[in-house]
Amino acid sequence: MTDITAPGERRRKSAAMGPAGRDPEAPDVRSEAASTRRRRAAADSSFTRSFLGAFARGTGLIAVALVIGIVLLQWSDASTDAAAGGAPPPVGTPVAPPETTTTTTAPAGPRAPGDLAVLVLNATGKNQQAKPMSDRLAVVGYRTLTPGNATRRSDSVVLCKTGLDEEATALVAATGLPATTAVLDDQAASGMEGASEADCVVIIGAR
Image (cartoon, rainbow, N blue to C red):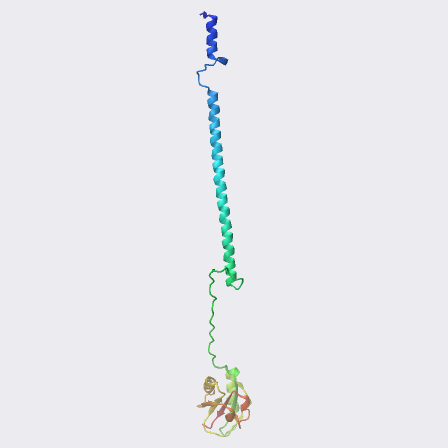
């Protein structure tokens, strides 16, 4: 079918369509797409700035916490050194009182047989009575001196120096004699040969 529209009418339609034959009242798709991209770019930029700001604040808080921890650690070390005898802590810092120790000395027990020098004397009036007893005590562990004789007496006695009461009792038991105990002082040792070198003297009586 032949277009019989007048030339002037066609020019008006062409002008109404605008450049490139596009209807000016039709929506501009490219312009809307570009606007959408700009909005997205702006939103991404805002998120990035927010993230970087939060990261910077978090890093700053961590740095502050580290500085506070180092300061507290140094203060604790200084207080410990002062309590151990170093430089005194700052005024107002509490310091633990020094520890006290108590030493308990156990009472000394009786001396061992090997620590005692023992002299055996024969006062029975019979021969060869002191040496067998001296040998017997040496077997038990006593440090025996050369046996000898003493003035005859009926009873047996064990004399030890002052402070050797327990040792005297143990020595009586070692002899097996029905002996009593007494103190070996200077007066008792006088007249007995070798008694001055002894800690204890065993006198064997006639009974």
